Image 1: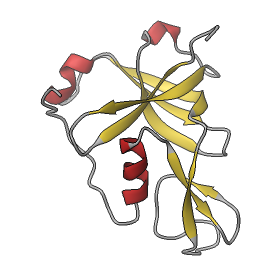
Image 2 (image 1 turned 135 degrees about the horizontal axis):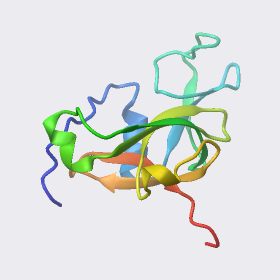
Image 3 (image 1 turned 180 degrees about the vertical axis):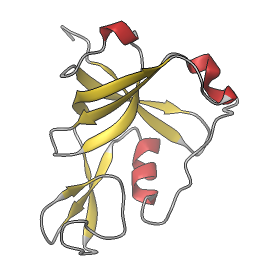
Length: 139
């Protein structure tokens, strides 16, 4: 594994399940057992009913681009080699909207409504980051 020189997430007790899932290449979201809501980003309490009766469920990993922006310059030095960076809000069928980077595509190919799927990158021995890429047609 090459040296990863970018910021890494700070794992909190309430987000540990999410990061344990990414390490196994699974996209996990919280589920409230009290009001049946799906929740993302990880939290201590359900934002709808304030219950702490939260579990983890595996999301499909499929999504659709809600909106996006492309960054061509003006980033921290550690991210210069990643330019252009495609930042997107995506909607999962589980009712979750996530912020992510789109990878394995050109900015001019991205469009609102585009089908995307999760892909995982093991960036350190302890951290795996989820990204999304276009769904390959005919696969």
